[in-house]
Length: 264
Image (cartoon, rainbow, N blue to C red; front, side, top):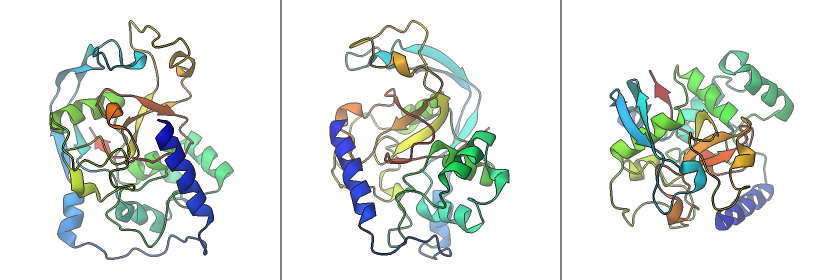
């Protein structure tokens, strides 16, 4: 993950070099109505059991052991939320209306005093996934559209349902594009564009044993870190599996993180 950290630092440096302040501005008509309809698609995941986690030789300690989980039926968005969709939230006063935010999220917002995602530019393609948002911002948007963030288990089950078994060369990972790409570029690849926030606190699975060393995961089982799933354009291929668990404090925005929504 060191390469991804370097990419984050370079992106932050690029932000400091912007000549003019970035404003949210009015919505732009960059996509046709049918494109908006496509981006709003959700898939229905039936109730049932699935195997969460992994016992493979590549699995890290927090992915182990694999275990059966039962989920009730739910809907999950086929694509991550785009810049165009998120702009609608901003234009509707999303960063100023208390009603969309959790108590913890509103407290964070009042402290941070932000009005847009960290990696935001009016010149970028509206089909790109929104990126540089905290879990609090993601939750506020989800509330705005009468949805919610998926749980880690919901994300993982859905990813296993729609992902292909082979890693096509066109998937956006390991700097293959050196930037996020339009969300419709890889509809069958939920892992490979931006990391995605979930509503789940990072925790140990029953039967957890530290590996490869005691301090890798265990110190972060403090219910202060949220699980992120998937992977970004800067993520190395070995990470790109549905069981992989990334974790960050919900107020962090510097990572290449976006989100998708769920219902039910």
